[in-house]
Length: 216
Image (cartoon, rainbow, N blue to C red; front, side, top):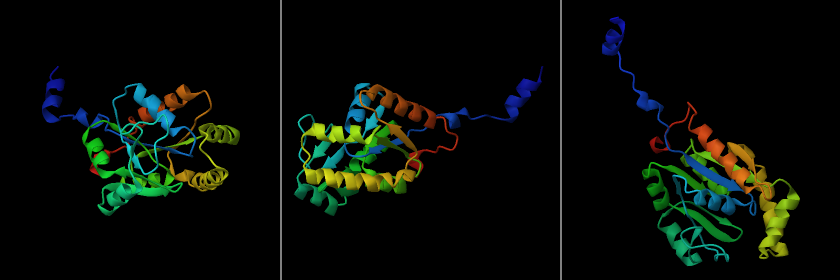
């Protein structure tokens, strides 16, 4: 009967080490695969995530909102941000600048929440270098036909744009080994896509090897 009190006095178990740490979740994928739509659905579910907003020099599309979908800035302002080292990464994508403001990442990592951000493959490579334990998810369409139909539905693509995006898609698909997960975003199956992403996040929170991104 005295064994339990003796064990308590000789050893203390710290169960705090088993509490899940916040994740840095990167959503990437081909142009037109539906990254923005997936991000909007995640936001609409009012999940306890911190969503990082990317800056871009391209003009907004009809359904996009400043500070929600992107920070829309002029090319000159973006180049000023580059010169001032205000971006954690940036690249020219389809002849327009895109990048992640450093202050966004700083605020996100200080929030204690899971952090979700959307980048292209170049950006994902940079994030992998800076945060090795980030969870990188690549979205692909179910078929080539679905992908082309999505691009055409924008009604903003010229023949030259299609060629550029096709060439870029071929290069991006050659780098799939950079990513931890591939999720197929099928037409009319948005809820399934988001559910699969949520399952990935839940599983990552239970990985023993996971360490806090704040320690890197």
